[in-house]
Image (tube, rainbow, N blue to C red; front, side, top):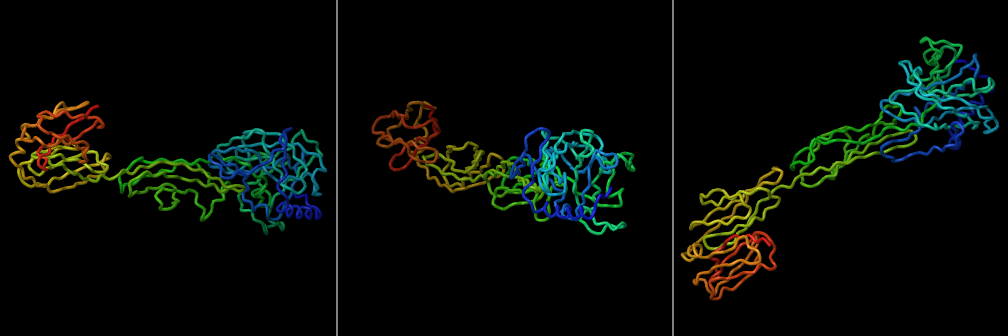
Length: 499
C-alpha cells in the first residue's frame, strides 16, 4: 500500500482518531438520491437481529492510517473488507470512517459518488463473484464515522466481502480517504498495533498485480506485512431463531425428556461478542430449579403437573444485544391413588370408588370370587369376614396402587329372604322406578344413595307392597337402592337412572 503521509497529514490523522472515538453519534449518509436514513439500534428483537458489526471495535483504536481512493491509475481505486459468516444474513448497509478532506469541518466539500459492492470471497479473502452493488454519495462529515444504508438490503448465505470502489463516474480530482489502524512500521518490522493478522484488508490497485493474478491484494501478506485489519463494518440483520424439539410431550413422574436444540445462532467472533460468563442458551424447565445453559440436554421431572418449558437465545452484538425465545409444554401425569367405601345391605353390598386419577379398576373381594373390573360393584358375600382390596392404574399406565379394607358380615335369614323377594324395575329408570317389598318390611324405608354413599332420597314403605319412587331432582347416573328395616339395611341393589 502506498503511504501518502506527510508530517502534517499524520498530525491531522492523529487528531481524527481521537475525535472519531469521542465525537457525537455518526452522521448518516445517503444511498443514491434517497433521503438520509437514521440507523436505530434494535434491542430485544426476536426472530432477527440488526447489529452494526465492528470487528472488533478495538481495531480502530491503534495507530491510524489513511489511504486515498481516486479514479487514478497511479492510486488505489477500491478497498475491501472480508467477513466470515456461518449462516444466512442480510446486509442493510455499512459504516466506515471516510473523509473528503482533513480540516474536520463538515459540509465544506461536495459529496463524492462511489459504488459499494458485495462479493463472495476466496480462500485468501479476495473478492470474487459479485452479489450486488449500490451507488452511494460519500458526504463530508468531518472527523466522524459515516453510515451508508442500502436502499435494497443484500442477502448473503455465508462469508462475503464488502468493497467501496471508485469509477469513471468520478472526476480524477475526486478523492475519498479511508481510515483504519495499522501496526507501526520502522521499515522492517511491525512495532505496535492491535491487528491480529486475520489478513482481512484488501485494496484494489490498477497498476499492481497480486500473486493470484488479480488487482486485489492483501496488505498483511503482500505489502511489507502491514497488519491493517479494520476498514469498514457491515450493518447486518442475522437469522436468529430459538427453536427446539422434545422426544415426548408427556411423561410419568420420575421420567425424563430429551430436549434437542435446533436454534440458529451465529457465534463467529466477527459477529458475536460472546465470551466467558455470557450464556448463549438459557433453559427454563418451569419447575423452579433455575436456569441451565447447555446446548441441549435431558431433564427429569418428579412432580405431576404441566410445565411450560422455555429456551432463550442470546445474541451479544456490537451495537445491540438481542433475545429470542420459544416454548414447549410438557405434561407429567398424575399418580393413581386407590381408595373406596361401601354401603352394607344384607347379603349384597355396594362398593363405591373414591380413588384419585384412576383409569382401570380391579376388585378382589377375598372370598374366592373372580376379580371385578367395574368401578362401583355390588357384591354378595357368604357369612364371614373378608379383606377387600381395590387396585387402580392411571390413564397413562404410569403407576398402580392398592387399597384394602376389612369387612365383616353377619348375615341373618331375613337378609336372604330380602334378596329373593325385593325387586327393582324398570332399569334403567327414567322418571320413576318401582320397588316391590314383601310385608316383612312394612314400616321400613326405601333409600337412594349415590356412588359415594351420600343419601339422596328416603321413601317410607308403610303397608304397600309396591313403592313408586320418583327420580325428580336426580341426575342421570349410577345409584344404589336399599331397604332399611329395624335400623339395618337388609337389601342393596345398583341401578341406572337415564333421564
